[in-house]
Length: 635
Ligand code: 6R9
Image (cartoon, rainbow, N blue to C red; front, side, top):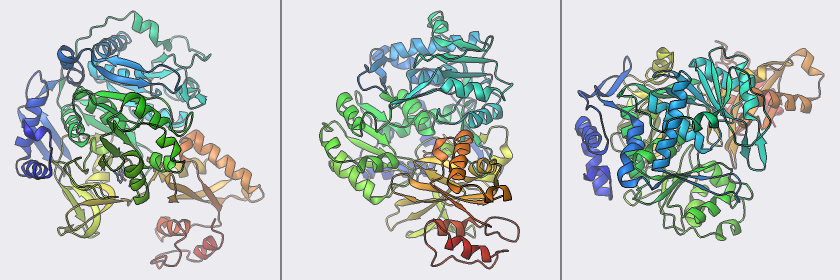
């Protein structure tokens, strides 16, 4: 059917119009023709953004792993499903065929069952980018357990918070991980976290770095011997369309991360359909997304989307800088990568290095380049286009979120003419709206406003785990009857969208969403700190970096400020993770506050960005005098 694979601009407009005029027919046709179901749905869509409640394909029965693995076995059993490229460039890449993937997922699923994991149980996966991570994820889906993957760069406190919030019975981890020339003691982090996690009964440990770790009797078990003894067939659990598939945490404006809950059928249909079109994936292409499976990009576009299309998806364990900054391009040449999907922060870091490291390699296999995670600035866009794509491979600047499950605004390569820094047009089925601050929709072109979505799409998160009220408050309360994204955007004269960035307290550093609240909470743990406020400021490589304003208690006043700065960053590393470290810390006597006691971050942001000529309205401040003092001492 033609609307599964869009090939030119007119076709995009046709498909898009249909998706808006008859959304139910549109999604139903895609769901019917491209997936296997135990039972089809009774109802394509029911929704009410006031509750909010959204259901897609209600009444349908399926298992997503059957769609991602089993159905490819007959024609494509020997095709590589996962191509694993290890951290060490000299180590051999591993090709896992669909048949092998089937066996390994089944074995893993049987191990989970033997440890008492059943449908609906939550399993926390805290693993580096090794095949076990994808396999564990799929094994949960095989038996209907809800996976909660936590990025293996998070600290023990952050891990414990996530394990407890969703009441996980099991943690799957490894002895450690490689990261460039370093190793990381993952099991040690898990041990620390579990001191505060009474819900966890079992820890399965994969061996990766052969380090000497301690195993807690009765709780911890090595994974491999269990897998070796497990049957390599496991009947898939029959799941309902709306059964939760996974929980994935994202930062919010309070200290508590939000456990976004994704459903089974809608998520599958949308990630598969977007993958096919946004990357123009063709049989036998080799596709590589450099994200970590610990983020939504990895869930949707390393694991589920590609596998649902029977694609070959690369999993890379390492980092772009090891053994040198040519590593990405070496891998592109080695595996003849056709689609390459990465983040602006990586592009900027690589662009800083000489072109020799690019020109050494043959990149002629590349057909489509992708960008995700934050706005891509014009310079990075051109560097990527000129030096990596050689002006031949369209760049798809894909805007979406953990909450949206799949890509929302994006060019379709070879169909949508690209424009630097513009994510361009909504994907079929997506109905964006720009809103002004009074809650009115801006209907014309050449406007900017707050980005909302006014109609449901299949892969939207259904709730926040354990806190539906927060889901409603965060996403459906700012604008009536619309999903609010938290981003600002502008629309140009032809209807292209450009995402301008967050309009809330989330700061995107190196493509990672960081809420200011959990970092401030960590800083405030320091015994010498009375209060703190964190804002972002532009950074060449990271996109944004963090600037902290810190009020010291009396005990802090006499301390050496540089030592204090180190200690504060150490606490952040322990509580949130190293990605949240502050680049600048300014000690101050006060923070600008409104009469209701809210910190005026807008002013702090301007000072951090060195834009002090117009601070805007300061008339509601309780203590306007601190502003001058902060400006005088700005770093
Ligand atoms: C997929 C992912 C979501 C936030 C989002 C926005 C920013 C993502 C972007 C982009 C501009 C793009 N963002 N892609 N901004 N252009 N192409 O990144 O999910 O980690 O939840 O972040 O990232 O601000 O709201 P997540």
